[in-house]
Length: 124
Image (cartoon, rainbow, N blue to C red; front, side, top):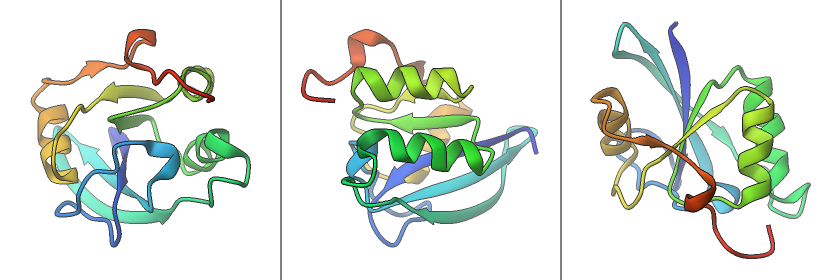
């Protein structure tokens, strides 16, 4: 496996699911195993309730599963720094409608790595 990609998703997850625009509040993560630029496997992982550790709980959850890349439409500064610290690269997926659209854009090299300028301004 070249990389394990996580995408915040609406239930029930999977490539056809709508993307969850804010990773900390998504229903579920769709995990996509990518090998040689192709999708090899798709699975899902429940997101813990937001109250349990706030936006930092998913960071540890995803790192523990071996995730190396995350696509996100919205994220606060603290979680972005936490993802960077555990070696997970975050890419800005903007307003792409489905998980599959996000994965295709990532594989095509169309997504930019998330930066401080992309973070949400709020109590994160």
